[in-house]
Image (cartoon, rainbow, N blue to C red; front, side):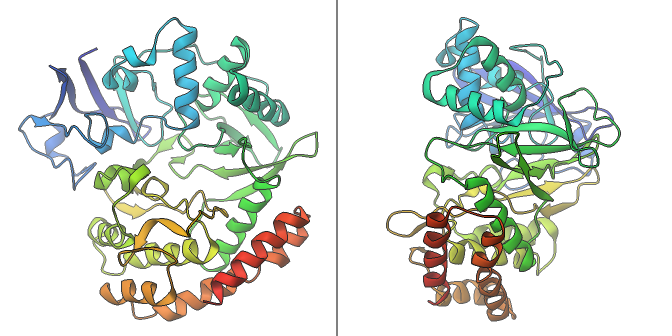
Length: 408
């Protein structure tokens, strides 16, 4: 596979963006001439519109631009993809990055699609049992699972990103039922993502993430509607409505990692870089406030898995950008108290003064008020968590850690 056509489809009609070509182990991209005249700038910092042939950088995304890398699965999705390839008799090391893009069909995050299209299986409607999915996900993580389990999990989560198992499902909140019809979302259903436990997760990880959702909402951090789903076993699973889908319409999704060409595993960027990107993309001087508020929350809630792939931007069919709702907020401390992103150049044991220094650089006048609002919302941890009957050891561990942090 050495030539792939890239389209963007907001849910109405595919628009040809351009062509990716691999030649002598290098990847090149050329915009379609007609696309150059549209008011759609899909990656304005690292893939600017031009009639010239563009050589994609060798790093940090295996020879492709961040725009296209954001469509590829990682973590859980990448694991399922590799095992599906192996099941079909192919080695993932033999697959070029361009060929990987052709396996995405139209189920990847955002609105980009790639042709020609390859499929590892035909998508069918599956009866959903959350407890079974949880057990099957654990089996895949431990020993690979069997062929039928792998087929079903790949269909539900083969294009997902992030380390934890997750599934893309259509959910009818009025009737509390799921559907996996990927061709078209039926009336009354909306696209949701449901998460399942990984091997090293807290016992009550779903409830913990739900409390974080409630606390973030209390301090005016924008998040997509979320809820806890209860399986027949009594286990709970965290679910959130997809913000890159509006019924059968799609929004273009671009992570900060892809937008700024940052390797999120060894990130070298600061929250300030994302704040600057927000101001430039939204063309508003105070667009960075939403990013700052999220930075404050992550620091004081000990969400240290706040890497550049865990923040993103959305673009609609008219070419307008906005900072995406927050996602993957949970208690995730690290040894040495290192955040994944720095604050005013500081990674370790970030304090209020570091946040104020960042805010001052961007002339955020109400920074101290934002910090106090976030701390107040985090002080509600035990009240909200107690109502959910979270494991007492985990509840007290997180309460102690948060209280210690917000007192700094």
